Picture (cartoon, rainbow, N blue to C red):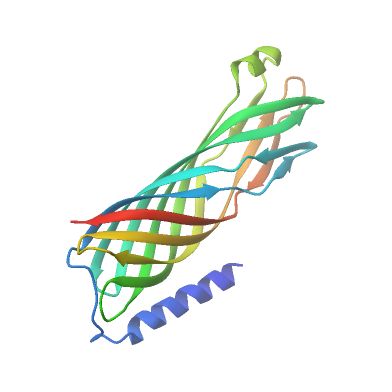
Amino acid sequence: MRKAVLAVFYLLFFLFFVANAGFAGGPENPFGLGGRISYYSAKENTLGDVKFELDGAALIEYNLTWFPMRLFSLEFSAGYTSSGLNGEVLGVPMEADFDQYPLLLTGRVHWWNKPSNFTLYGGGGVGYYVKNVQLPFMQTLAFPGLSVKSDDGFGYHVAGGLEWFFTKRWALNLDLKYIWHSADFTLNIPGITPITEEFDFDTFATYIGIKFYI
């Protein structure tokens, strides 16, 4: 999988250096502030004999884009999603709130059309994912000492999409990302040795958003 990701990066850098420097296009303002929304759904997994599943949820993201040059941009984004974490412990259903805060940095190579009203792009980058698992009060009251924790950690992604400038400063954005990310989950059950296993967060996300260039 990592070889495939590296191959994508090599291809993008090749396209960047051979792109026609005389091709018209590019935003008049180098900085863009925007927001977008997606549907987030990660793969289900298990911790020992305990099976967990993350519910799908809306993923809200705010982003800052910088064009140091016409054919290349850097985008920093900060997002938030809150999912239900469902499982079964000792034959008793367990529910928890799972919050995730992805912080992503993405490099993007652009192709502009001649009228300069839209750009296609492709790229990739890295992310750091902050997580929090919160058990309901009644769950902790019924099972004193029961807890679920998730490590924060790094991931990486490839991205592609388009931005359509319907004015000189405003643009609509369609962004596609495939994200590779995993983290250790630890389940503490009173009287049982804590269980720690890797939870797979790989997912494909489609974002729709709007951006203002300043």
